[in-house]
Image (cartoon, rainbow, N blue to C red; front, side, top):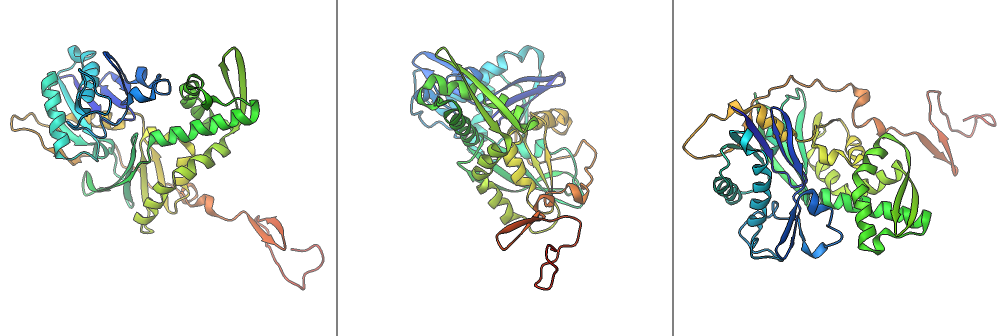
Length: 381
Protein backbone atom coordinates (compact mmCIF):
# COMPACT_ATOMS: atom_id res chain seq x y z
CA UNK A 1 0.00 0.00 0.00
CA UNK A 2 1.29 3.50 -0.81
CA UNK A 3 2.66 4.99 2.43
CA UNK A 4 3.52 8.60 3.23
CA UNK A 5 5.98 9.57 5.94
CA UNK A 6 5.42 13.09 7.32
CA UNK A 7 8.16 14.80 9.31
CA UNK A 8 6.68 17.52 11.52
CA UNK A 9 9.78 19.65 11.97
CA UNK A 10 8.52 23.23 11.72
CA UNK A 11 11.69 24.34 9.93
CA UNK A 12 10.73 22.04 7.06
CA UNK A 13 7.52 20.00 7.17
CA UNK A 14 8.30 17.20 4.75
CA UNK A 15 6.31 14.39 3.21
CA UNK A 16 8.07 11.46 1.55
CA UNK A 17 6.59 8.50 -0.34
CA UNK A 18 8.17 5.70 -2.37
CA UNK A 19 8.24 8.12 -5.30
CA UNK A 20 10.30 10.70 -3.39
CA UNK A 21 9.61 14.03 -1.68
CA UNK A 22 5.91 14.91 -2.02
CA UNK A 23 6.05 18.25 -0.20
CA UNK A 24 8.43 20.31 1.90
CA UNK A 25 7.68 23.72 3.39
CA UNK A 26 8.30 25.68 6.60
CA UNK A 27 5.75 26.08 9.38
CA UNK A 28 4.86 29.69 8.59
CA UNK A 29 1.39 31.20 8.39
CA UNK A 30 0.17 34.68 7.46
CA UNK A 31 -3.23 35.63 8.83
CA UNK A 32 -4.59 38.92 7.57
CA UNK A 33 -8.34 39.09 8.10
CA UNK A 34 -9.97 36.59 5.77
CA UNK A 35 -6.71 36.02 3.88
CA UNK A 36 -4.35 33.22 4.95
CA UNK A 37 -1.10 31.97 3.45
CA UNK A 38 1.08 29.06 4.53
CA UNK A 39 4.57 27.71 3.98
CA UNK A 40 6.78 29.30 1.36
CA UNK A 41 4.11 31.85 0.41
CA UNK A 42 3.86 33.05 4.00
CA UNK A 43 7.63 33.08 4.46
CA UNK A 44 7.95 35.33 1.39
CA UNK A 45 5.95 38.01 3.22
CA UNK A 46 7.44 37.57 6.71
CA UNK A 47 9.40 40.86 6.67
CA UNK A 48 6.64 42.75 4.87
CA UNK A 49 3.91 41.75 7.35
CA UNK A 50 5.67 40.83 10.61
CA UNK A 51 2.58 41.39 12.80
CA UNK A 52 0.45 39.00 10.72
CA UNK A 53 3.04 36.19 10.65
CA UNK A 54 2.99 33.23 13.02
CA UNK A 55 5.62 30.48 13.01
CA UNK A 56 5.16 29.02 16.50
CA UNK A 57 1.97 27.04 16.07
CA UNK A 58 3.68 23.66 15.58
CA UNK A 59 6.12 24.36 18.41
CA UNK A 60 3.27 25.44 20.73
CA UNK A 61 0.62 23.13 19.31
CA UNK A 62 -2.38 23.60 21.61
CA UNK A 63 -5.87 25.02 21.80
CA UNK A 64 -4.53 28.27 23.26
CA UNK A 65 -5.73 31.45 21.58
CA UNK A 66 -3.59 33.04 18.89
CA UNK A 67 -2.28 36.56 19.49
CA UNK A 68 -3.62 37.57 16.05
CA UNK A 69 -6.65 35.29 15.73
CA UNK A 70 -9.29 35.42 13.03
CA UNK A 71 -12.71 33.88 12.57
CA UNK A 72 -11.14 30.91 10.76
CA UNK A 73 -8.07 30.52 12.95
CA UNK A 74 -8.55 31.09 16.66
CA UNK A 75 -5.93 28.73 18.13
CA UNK A 76 -2.46 27.35 17.38
CA UNK A 77 -4.10 24.02 16.54
CA UNK A 78 -6.32 25.72 13.95
CA UNK A 79 -3.25 26.93 12.04
CA UNK A 80 -1.59 23.51 12.20
CA UNK A 81 -4.77 21.86 10.94
CA UNK A 82 -5.11 24.28 8.02
CA UNK A 83 -1.53 23.75 6.88
CA UNK A 84 -1.75 19.98 7.23
CA UNK A 85 -5.09 19.93 5.38
CA UNK A 86 -3.56 21.91 2.53
CA UNK A 87 -0.59 19.55 2.24
CA UNK A 88 -2.63 16.37 2.57
CA UNK A 89 -5.31 17.37 0.06
CA UNK A 90 -2.68 17.71 -2.67
CA UNK A 91 -1.60 14.05 -2.37
CA UNK A 92 -4.43 12.19 -0.60
CA UNK A 93 -5.65 10.38 -3.74
CA UNK A 94 -2.32 8.60 -4.23
CA UNK A 95 -1.74 7.39 -0.65
CA UNK A 96 -3.47 5.00 1.72
CA UNK A 97 -1.47 5.24 4.97
CA UNK A 98 0.44 7.94 6.84
CA UNK A 99 3.17 7.69 9.47
CA UNK A 100 4.09 10.79 11.46
CA UNK A 101 7.61 11.58 12.73
CA UNK A 102 6.91 14.00 15.57
CA UNK A 103 9.13 16.49 17.45
CA UNK A 104 10.82 15.35 20.61
CA UNK A 105 9.55 18.42 22.50
CA UNK A 106 5.88 17.40 22.18
CA UNK A 107 4.08 15.98 25.20
CA UNK A 108 1.16 13.54 25.25
CA UNK A 109 -1.46 16.32 24.96
CA UNK A 110 0.10 17.52 21.73
CA UNK A 111 0.27 14.01 20.32
CA UNK A 112 -3.42 13.66 21.11
CA UNK A 113 -4.17 16.93 19.32
CA UNK A 114 -2.31 15.72 16.23
CA UNK A 115 -4.29 12.48 16.17
CA UNK A 116 -7.53 14.44 16.53
CA UNK A 117 -6.57 16.75 13.67
CA UNK A 118 -5.60 13.79 11.48
CA UNK A 119 -8.90 12.06 12.21
CA UNK A 120 -10.88 15.18 11.37
CA UNK A 121 -9.01 15.55 8.09
CA UNK A 122 -9.53 11.89 7.21
CA UNK A 123 -5.81 11.11 7.24
CA UNK A 124 -5.36 7.31 7.55
CA UNK A 125 -2.78 7.35 10.35
CA UNK A 126 -0.79 4.17 10.96
CA UNK A 127 1.62 5.33 13.66
CA UNK A 128 3.66 7.99 15.44
CA UNK A 129 7.41 7.90 16.01
CA UNK A 130 9.94 10.25 17.57
CA UNK A 131 11.79 12.29 14.91
CA UNK A 132 15.27 11.38 16.16
CA UNK A 133 14.40 7.67 16.10
CA UNK A 134 12.90 7.94 12.61
CA UNK A 135 16.00 9.71 11.29
CA UNK A 136 18.43 7.15 12.76
CA UNK A 137 18.75 4.28 10.30
CA UNK A 138 22.29 3.09 11.00
CA UNK A 139 24.24 1.66 13.90
CA UNK A 140 27.36 3.60 14.95
CA UNK A 141 29.45 0.89 16.67
CA UNK A 142 32.11 1.74 19.27
CA UNK A 143 30.66 5.24 19.76
CA UNK A 144 27.96 6.98 21.71
CA UNK A 145 25.36 8.51 19.37
CA UNK A 146 23.72 11.93 19.63
CA UNK A 147 21.08 13.15 17.19
CA UNK A 148 21.00 16.95 16.79
CA UNK A 149 17.70 18.26 15.41
CA UNK A 150 17.44 21.89 14.34
CA UNK A 151 13.88 23.25 14.35
CA UNK A 152 12.73 26.86 14.11
CA UNK A 153 12.83 27.76 17.80
CA UNK A 154 15.06 25.22 19.52
CA UNK A 155 17.77 22.67 18.95
CA UNK A 156 17.11 19.20 20.30
CA UNK A 157 20.04 17.03 21.39
CA UNK A 158 18.99 13.40 21.79
CA UNK A 159 21.19 10.71 23.26
CA UNK A 160 20.33 7.55 21.29
CA UNK A 161 20.46 4.01 22.62
CA UNK A 162 21.94 1.41 20.25
CA UNK A 163 20.99 -1.83 21.96
CA UNK A 164 19.96 -3.78 18.87
CA UNK A 165 17.92 -0.88 17.43
CA UNK A 166 17.75 2.89 17.20
CA UNK A 167 16.19 3.90 20.49
CA UNK A 168 15.39 7.05 22.44
CA UNK A 169 17.47 7.46 25.62
CA UNK A 170 17.47 11.11 26.77
CA UNK A 171 16.59 14.41 25.15
CA UNK A 172 17.98 17.84 25.96
CA UNK A 173 16.83 21.17 24.54
CA UNK A 174 18.73 24.34 23.66
CA UNK A 175 15.74 26.68 23.71
CA UNK A 176 15.23 29.99 21.94
CA UNK A 177 18.06 29.06 19.59
CA UNK A 178 17.12 27.46 16.32
CA UNK A 179 16.94 27.83 12.57
CA UNK A 180 15.07 31.13 12.83
CA UNK A 181 17.78 32.75 14.98
CA UNK A 182 20.51 31.39 12.71
CA UNK A 183 18.76 32.83 9.66
CA UNK A 184 18.42 36.17 11.43
CA UNK A 185 22.13 36.15 12.26
CA UNK A 186 23.03 35.48 8.62
CA UNK A 187 20.58 38.12 7.38
CA UNK A 188 22.17 40.69 9.68
CA UNK A 189 25.65 39.67 8.52
CA UNK A 190 24.77 40.05 4.84
CA UNK A 191 23.02 43.38 5.49
CA UNK A 192 26.07 44.67 7.38
CA UNK A 193 28.29 43.81 4.40
CA UNK A 194 26.01 45.77 2.06
CA UNK A 195 26.31 48.79 4.37
CA UNK A 196 30.12 48.50 4.34
CA UNK A 197 30.47 47.88 0.61
CA UNK A 198 27.64 49.93 -0.93
CA UNK A 199 26.34 52.19 1.85
CA UNK A 200 23.02 50.42 1.37
CA UNK A 201 21.18 49.24 4.47
CA UNK A 202 18.68 46.51 3.50
CA UNK A 203 17.24 46.52 7.02
CA UNK A 204 16.07 50.12 6.63
CA UNK A 205 12.95 49.11 4.66
CA UNK A 206 10.80 46.01 4.85
CA UNK A 207 10.91 45.41 1.08
CA UNK A 208 14.71 45.40 0.89
CA UNK A 209 14.95 43.29 4.06
CA UNK A 210 12.66 40.70 2.46
CA UNK A 211 14.98 40.57 -0.56
CA UNK A 212 17.89 39.58 1.69
CA UNK A 213 15.93 36.72 3.25
CA UNK A 214 14.61 35.57 -0.13
CA UNK A 215 18.22 35.06 -1.27
CA UNK A 216 19.65 33.94 2.06
CA UNK A 217 19.75 30.16 1.59
CA UNK A 218 21.06 30.48 -1.97
CA UNK A 219 23.95 32.57 -0.66
CA UNK A 220 24.58 30.13 2.19
CA UNK A 221 24.80 27.23 -0.26
CA UNK A 222 27.20 29.17 -2.51
CA UNK A 223 29.44 30.11 0.42
CA UNK A 224 29.75 26.43 1.34
CA UNK A 225 31.40 25.93 -2.08
CA UNK A 226 33.38 29.19 -2.36
CA UNK A 227 35.65 31.04 0.07
CA UNK A 228 34.55 34.41 -1.32
CA UNK A 229 31.38 35.62 -3.00
CA UNK A 230 29.99 38.84 -4.43
CA UNK A 231 26.35 39.38 -3.54
CA UNK A 232 23.98 41.56 -5.52
CA UNK A 233 20.55 43.01 -4.78
CA UNK A 234 18.42 45.10 -7.14
CA UNK A 235 16.30 47.61 -5.22
CA UNK A 236 14.55 50.87 -6.07
CA UNK A 237 16.18 51.04 -9.50
CA UNK A 238 19.73 50.45 -8.24
CA UNK A 239 22.00 47.41 -8.18
CA UNK A 240 23.86 47.05 -4.89
CA UNK A 241 26.81 44.72 -4.35
CA UNK A 242 28.71 43.34 -1.38
CA UNK A 243 31.74 41.07 -1.01
CA UNK A 244 31.63 38.40 1.67
CA UNK A 245 33.96 35.69 2.91
CA UNK A 246 32.78 32.34 4.17
CA UNK A 247 35.25 32.56 7.07
CA UNK A 248 33.63 35.75 8.41
CA UNK A 249 30.13 34.32 8.05
CA UNK A 250 31.27 31.18 9.86
CA UNK A 251 32.53 33.28 12.77
CA UNK A 252 29.10 34.93 13.07
CA UNK A 253 27.36 31.56 13.10
CA UNK A 254 29.75 30.04 15.63
CA UNK A 255 29.05 32.81 18.13
CA UNK A 256 25.31 32.17 17.93
CA UNK A 257 25.85 28.40 18.15
CA UNK A 258 27.86 28.59 21.38
CA UNK A 259 24.90 27.48 23.59
CA UNK A 260 24.66 24.28 21.53
CA UNK A 261 28.39 23.65 21.76
CA UNK A 262 28.34 24.23 25.53
CA UNK A 263 25.44 21.79 25.93
CA UNK A 264 27.31 19.11 23.99
CA UNK A 265 30.50 19.68 25.97
CA UNK A 266 28.53 19.08 29.16
CA UNK A 267 27.18 15.77 27.76
CA UNK A 268 30.30 14.32 26.17
CA UNK A 269 32.37 12.24 28.54
CA UNK A 270 35.56 12.01 26.50
CA UNK A 271 34.56 8.73 24.89
CA UNK A 272 34.30 8.42 21.09
CA UNK A 273 30.93 9.64 19.86
CA UNK A 274 28.99 10.24 16.65
CA UNK A 275 26.98 13.41 16.05
CA UNK A 276 24.10 13.06 13.60
CA UNK A 277 22.81 16.45 12.37
CA UNK A 278 19.61 17.14 10.42
CA UNK A 279 19.87 18.85 7.04
CA UNK A 280 18.33 22.20 8.07
CA UNK A 281 21.03 22.73 10.69
CA UNK A 282 23.67 21.34 8.34
CA UNK A 283 23.05 24.27 5.97
CA UNK A 284 24.96 26.55 8.37
CA UNK A 285 28.66 25.82 7.81
CA UNK A 286 29.79 27.79 10.87
CA UNK A 287 27.69 25.57 13.13
CA UNK A 288 29.14 22.46 11.50
CA UNK A 289 32.67 23.82 11.98
CA UNK A 290 31.94 24.45 15.66
CA UNK A 291 30.72 20.86 16.08
CA UNK A 292 33.72 19.49 14.20
CA UNK A 293 35.97 21.20 16.74
CA UNK A 294 34.57 19.04 19.55
CA UNK A 295 37.17 16.40 20.49
CA UNK A 296 36.83 12.74 19.57
CA UNK A 297 33.61 13.18 17.57
CA UNK A 298 32.55 11.94 14.14
CA UNK A 299 30.02 14.20 12.41
CA UNK A 300 27.36 13.13 9.89
CA UNK A 301 24.88 15.49 8.18
CA UNK A 302 21.68 13.68 7.19
CA UNK A 303 19.77 14.13 3.95
CA UNK A 304 16.76 16.45 3.82
CA UNK A 305 13.61 14.81 5.14
CA UNK A 306 15.59 12.01 6.80
CA UNK A 307 12.94 11.36 9.46
CA UNK A 308 10.09 11.25 6.93
CA UNK A 309 12.09 8.94 4.70
CA UNK A 310 13.20 6.78 7.63
CA UNK A 311 9.69 6.16 8.96
CA UNK A 312 8.28 5.54 5.48
CA UNK A 313 10.95 2.96 4.66
CA UNK A 314 10.28 1.10 7.95
CA UNK A 315 6.49 1.17 7.77
CA UNK A 316 6.36 -2.58 8.30
CA UNK A 317 7.46 -1.95 11.90
CA UNK A 318 4.01 -0.42 12.48
CA UNK A 319 1.43 -3.23 12.27
CA UNK A 320 -2.18 -2.10 11.69
CA UNK A 321 -4.13 -1.72 14.92
CA UNK A 322 -7.54 -0.64 16.16
CA UNK A 323 -6.31 -0.20 19.73
CA UNK A 324 -5.09 3.39 19.36
CA UNK A 325 -1.56 4.71 19.01
CA UNK A 326 1.42 5.02 21.27
CA UNK A 327 4.54 6.97 20.46
CA UNK A 328 7.19 4.65 19.01
CA UNK A 329 10.58 5.26 20.60
CA UNK A 330 12.65 2.50 18.94
CA UNK A 331 12.98 1.20 15.38
CA UNK A 332 15.25 -1.40 13.76
CA UNK A 333 18.12 -0.19 11.60
CA UNK A 334 17.55 -0.64 7.90
CA UNK A 335 20.98 0.50 6.65
CA UNK A 336 24.44 -0.94 7.22
CA UNK A 337 26.51 0.16 10.21
CA UNK A 338 28.80 3.20 9.97
CA UNK A 339 32.44 2.49 10.75
CA UNK A 340 34.34 5.05 12.86
CA UNK A 341 36.11 7.74 10.85
CA UNK A 342 39.92 7.63 10.64
CA UNK A 343 41.58 9.66 13.39
CA UNK A 344 42.74 12.35 10.94
CA UNK A 345 39.13 13.09 9.94
CA UNK A 346 37.76 13.43 13.46
CA UNK A 347 36.60 16.65 15.03
CA UNK A 348 39.69 17.33 17.13
CA UNK A 349 42.01 17.64 14.11
CA UNK A 350 41.54 21.39 13.80
CA UNK A 351 42.56 21.95 17.42
CA UNK A 352 46.29 21.32 16.92
CA UNK A 353 48.35 24.52 17.37
CA UNK A 354 49.68 26.11 14.19
CA UNK A 355 51.90 28.89 15.64
CA UNK A 356 53.87 29.75 18.74
CA UNK A 357 54.14 33.29 20.07
CA UNK A 358 57.63 34.30 21.33
CA UNK A 359 58.72 37.82 22.26
CA UNK A 360 55.89 39.39 20.30
CA UNK A 361 56.44 37.36 17.12
CA UNK A 362 54.38 34.40 15.83
CA UNK A 363 56.32 31.46 14.38
CA UNK A 364 54.62 28.81 12.25
CA UNK A 365 54.92 25.25 13.57
CA UNK A 366 55.92 22.62 11.03
CA UNK A 367 57.50 19.16 10.91
CA UNK A 368 61.00 20.54 11.77
CA UNK A 369 62.13 20.68 15.43
CA UNK A 370 61.47 24.02 17.11
CA UNK A 371 63.82 25.15 19.87
CA UNK A 372 63.84 28.27 22.02
CA UNK A 373 66.78 29.10 24.32
CA UNK A 374 69.43 31.66 25.27
CA UNK A 375 72.34 29.53 23.97
CA UNK A 376 71.06 29.23 20.40
CA UNK A 377 73.07 30.76 17.58
CA UNK A 378 71.75 33.98 16.08
CA UNK A 379 68.86 33.33 13.70
CA UNK A 380 68.24 29.81 15.08
CA UNK A 381 64.86 28.87 16.57
